[in-house]
Length: 237
Image (tube, rainbow, N blue to C red):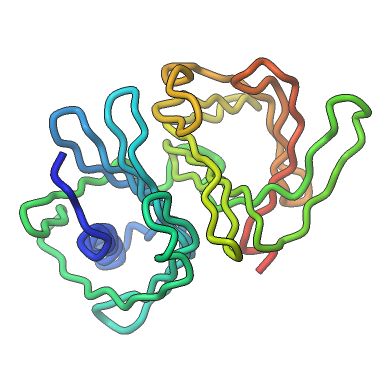
């Protein structure tokens, strides 16, 4: 897989944003670049984005953070995590936008739309704000501080990322495809930074939205019972 620098990938990602805005299809969704089985996948919500590189059965790297429009033909991005180079965390850049048809082409690379935020019911950027202790069953709440566990979802793709914006430490990530059908949220793992043997697993969970929060319960990839509460970042920040 050819080496892609940060500025190139950000340009690639946010050119896709420009197309989606011009086409009036919404700016949320997932985008993909493929080369000989290797993938770059980006998930974009109205305020946050993630970009991940992975090979078959092997995670390579990820970075992401927040973004906002910065003029008619540019956006401003701020990096919250970067698994390859932590010195990028906290940096902001203004990225120019250009569009050619329905494909984003930069320096020979083409990013294609996977989805536009549908059909999954959880298209958003979420922070873990509560988790039940396995022993006592007591709910432990989390404050919105520098240490974050985030899930970012489009209509078909998901990714979780654990990181600390203060120490710039990246702790882990995993992701792939998901579905939401009849109260069941199912993850199909395509990459997992901590243990590549989990790739290919399909994990079903019960889910419901209660007062705007995503309640998520079932068994983890290690078979341990979990009950988590996730809150939309838009309601916390």
